[in-house]
Image (cartoon, rainbow, N blue to C red; front, top):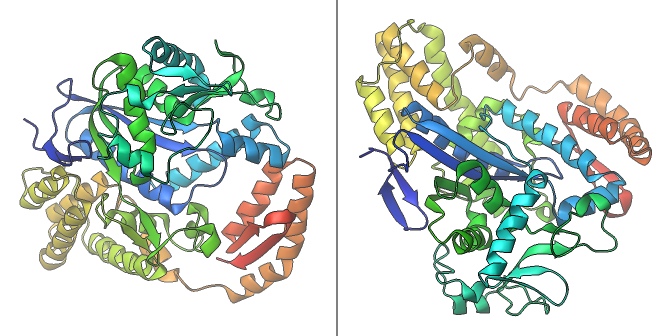
Length: 469
């Protein structure tokens, strides 16, 4: 039996991990809906499963990791129409920005990154199977809906009964449904929607619902039953609950063995929200903090715990990471491989095997740093660098990080003044680029201002305001 224990949301307990196929793991994580820049909540989610992916591989497993891209959805269509651009132009651009952001954070690329629009035939096939099993029906409005009450076991992931869910505030009151709990599998095309949002199906032109997308992509790439499915805690219900209903309803057997959910992110102890003015994109944060500092800050919290974002916590993370790099700067690591039987490595592995306990694993790194400082032993410096590398930390030359850390927070007043004088002109140039439908240039200007410490905020009615990051 594996020594790895995972908190399985479905079982509501930690369980020893046993893969379906010995030595191999199949992992699916719900990825981004691509229509805007990724925010720090997205960073927290992707970091959580980057750690899962890294530790599974470090433990000797061969891992097939699938993290999807949702490139067709209501918000995507709305944003493309507002921008007077195609859906493809919008999603291609923001997919590129997402890759830039997560690469900066050291998040490894998945094995497969499917786009929903490439798997519409598989989605149609699943819906047809559900229809044959009396688990799907065509509503009066032309949508195809899932008949929740016909699936025995609905609510087992969220732990809620049908009656609890029926009374809940998330219930859809669409009058075209037989039951308010039913959810859409296929949306009939609306007259105002662009042609790129319309696909052929036995039920006419339309597009898939969000939930069926993940079921189809997961089954197509990982098989009809796989090891681990992950995502943010906000996806547990209804998204993942509906995935189970669709997949198990169509297949007739369990869909996933282990469900993993990362905790919520808050900003200064409040929910992150644009309306509260505490909403931060990854790009905005990286104008002020080194990417490895943000990574380290996230890893110091257990993935299932709430994470409170604040400048104070990031400043503390920078100082703590500086201590680790300082130890490696003072004592060069030897060139031998990581010794997994060494005492610190054993404690590190025990922490990671206990539901990916990165805070405890990081504490082992500080123990090692203290020993390196005390003994000046190159072998311990090697252990520090090697174990940290498993988490994607301490992979730069120490001097490269330390020189940057010493400059942190020392703003260039002259440059800020020059930028402030020029920002209105840049904002006007961006507005002109948008008017000309040159969205790549508009995004370039916005990104350049980000890099200079200026955040642009588009307001209703077309106005744009700016502020210092």
